Length: 254
Image 1 (cartoon, helix red, strand yellow):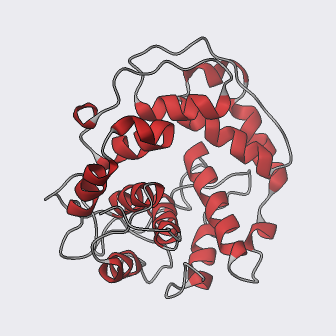
Image 2 (image 1 turned 90 degrees about the vertical axis):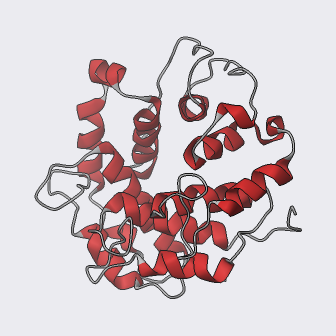
């Protein structure tokens, strides 16, 4: 099954490539310089689109420019970057046919789930348990998502977690930061991906998909909501949300 059925793939591909900079990397809008996050999210989207179409959009990426972007952030400047961006740099390097690595001291026990997750991806340093992983230690769906990626079985009764995630879905099909909050495309990504990790489904699959598709704009990219401007990050969240919806599960957690 193609998870991207119903979206304008050609328009999205052109939207992404239009943000590639001559000097290397991708920018949030064509008039701005390239950033690590925009570059990573653009490359991931092109790779995903190539899996489900014959366009091979990633062949249009300037890999020499990617190597120049990486060099700008290596060395002393990398010390000030959060683990998330350092991980993104390793993925950009892999796309460009290079390999880079980073070393870290052992992280502290009060690191966020997100930082611990990305530190695990880029460092061999042992990670702390980060205290008791339980329902009281997170509030937003993003925090829960990274906690589940780290150690899903530490959250106790997963049926309760799945019910909480389902309760984040609103009448418009999208998901909020937590139950009864406004729908945004990134929340749909985190909630749907979390449900997929649990082997569960949202309450309403049809409207969940319709909300995501409705966020694609005439420009080809996706917006946070149906009435906002499109950006690479929103488009990245949209594709990952659709991919999560397509994950086959053996049985729902009730």
